[in-house]
Image 1 (cartoon, each protein chain N blue to C red):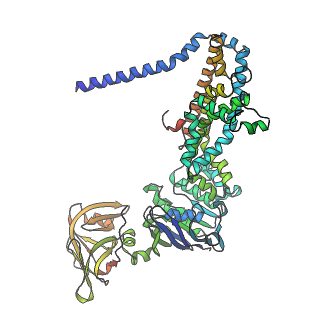
Image 2: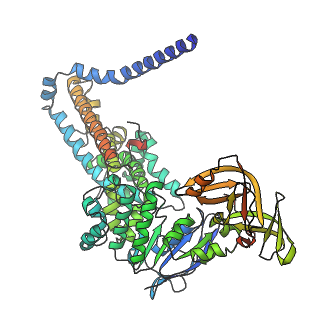
Image 3: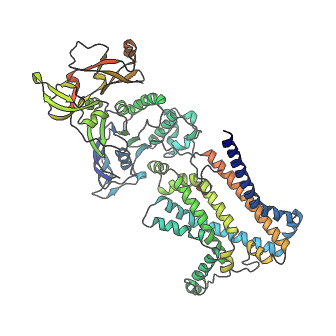
Length: 281
Length: 348
C-alpha cells in the first residue's frame, strides 16, 4: 500500500517540522542573551553595584521565603494529603489560587491586606510594623506567589506514599510523629525537593507582586528581575549579564532536579516525579 | 496460651455492615471472597480501623471497648500485623526493617528466619518468599501478644507458594500466641489453621475445623467455597426412605439426606469416581457425559463432566487415558451427597 506509506512519511515530516519550529522558538531568546554577552563582560558586570545589590536582595529574600514555605507548607501539605474533611477540595483550591492569580493582582491583594490602609495594616501599625516597600515585603510577595508550587508538589508526594507503610510503622510501635519522620518524610523526600526547587525558581523570578507591594529600591527591595526592568533602557549590558546569570541558574536547577528525580526513581519503585507526571522523562 | 476475643464488633463498609465475633485460641483462618470484610477485621484488631461498637481484647488486655470508651492507638497494642504486600520499608535494609520495633531483638529474628545473610539488602531486591520472612521477622520482633496475617500467600507465585505454605505452617505450629489469618483460599486456610471461619458480606456463616466444614457445610455458599460441586433441583420422596432430587437439567440423583422442595446438593470432587464403562458398584448416581475440561493441579487432576467436576490423581488419569471430549461415567454414592440450605448467591 504505497499511498499509506507516503502519508505516514508526510506525517512524520510534519511532526519533525513542528518540533523544530517549537524548539527553535523556545531556545532562540536564550541563545540571543549569550550571543550579546561575552564571559568577560559577564564577570565584569558582576562588579556593578546595581547588579550586586540586586543579587544580594534576591538571594536573601528568596532564601528566607523558602525557609518559611518549607516550615509552613510541609505540615499543610501533609494535612491536605492525609486527611479528608469537609471543605477539603475548597482548601486545596485556596492553596493553589496564587498560582493562577495574575502577579499584579497578587500585589494589590497584598497591599489591600498588609498595606497601611489594608485589612491588617492598622493592627500591624499598632506594633510599629509597616510592611509595604520594605525587604520583608519582598519576602512576603515571594512566599505568596511561590508557595503553591511547593505545596502542590508536596501534597502529591505525600499522597504517593503507601498508606500501608505508615500503618505498618504504627503497628510496630511507632508514634505518629516518629512515623512521619522515619517513614513518610524519607519516602516523600524526592517530591518535596522537586517542589522546593520549582518554588525557588518561581520566587527568584518574581516581578509583578513584588513591584506592587515592595517597590523597586536599589539595595532594599530591588530584586534581579526588578533591576533588569529598571536598567534595560539605561545599561543594556548590565541587563544582559543579570539575565545570563539567571539563565545559568535556571539550567543548573533544572538539571539538578532531573538528575535527582532519576536517582530517586531508580532507588525506589514508588516515587513521585516532577509535576506528578510519572515516566515522562 | 492467650486468647484473642473480638466481641460483636460492627464496622460500616461500603455496601454492608461488618458485624461479627471471633475467639482465637491457637490459629484461626478467616476465609471468604474478596470484599467480604476480612482485612477490616485485622485492621480493627490492630487499631487501624475504629469499629462503631463492640470489644476487642487479648485475655484481660483490652484494646478496644466502645461501651467503656477504651481505644488504644495502634502503637499501644502489642500486635504483629503482616500486610498482604508485606509493607516493608523500601528505604531501609532488611536489618533496619527488623530492628524498627525493637533495636536489640534483630539478630535473634534474622537468624531464626534465615535472613541474616540478607541483612543489608533492600526489600526491592528480595524474592517473594524472602520478603514474607522479613515481614514475619519484623512483626514477631515486636514481641506481639497476637499475630495477624493478611492473605499471607497471595503475593506469591504458584511455584513458591507450596514451599512457603509448608514453612509458614511449621512456624505457626511453633508459636505460642493466637494467630488470626485471612485468606480467600479455603485450601490455604485448611493447610494453615486449626479452625476456619467462613465470612461473607461481613458476617460469619460457619466456624469449624476444615474437615468439619467439608463434612457438614452450613449452606450452599460454604459448600461451594470449600470446593463442592453445587447441583440445584427439586426434592421428591424416593424408594426405601431415600430421597430423589430432580436436577434442573433433568438428571435424577439419589441422596440419603432428608429434604423437600427446592434444594441445593453438595458433592465433593474427590467423592466422584470416573470410568469409561458404567459402574457395577454401590453408587446410585451416574452421570454419563463428555469430559469438558482437564486441568492439572500439581499431582491431582480436575475434570469437568456434565454438571460436576471430579478430582482424581495424575496417576489415575494416566492409567485411564481420558481425553477432552471423551464420553465417560461419573458416579457418586447417595451418601456422598449433602443437602444444603440454598443461600442467595451474591453476584459481584
